[in-house]
Length: 125
Image (cartoon, rainbow, N blue to C red):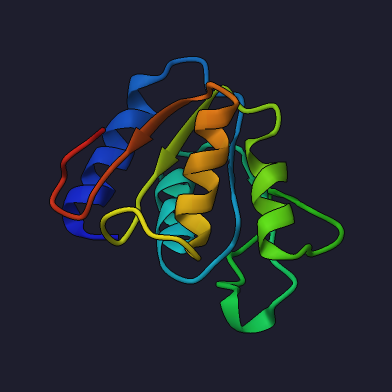
């Protein structure tokens, strides 16, 4: 994540007073950054890793719920948004096919899930 994305994620996570827990996919990059922010804010974390070891950040799962079985990324992404009330997504740039982040955003939109998409420059849609 860029500095602007990290700042906005932290802001959004502190704005919500009733967060039970946050979920992420344990991927290198934005998921690892999100985990660090959630840990700093002392939020309960649920971690759903992909079954591709090279994609994983291996975030510290002490004190977190860690899914028992890693799943294929697209399957895991659907599990992450299932039962969620809100999605915060930090893509690397404009929408693209064959992007796990964008696939998750599109799936969230199909479920009418409230979503904040934070672009690298800090623009939020």
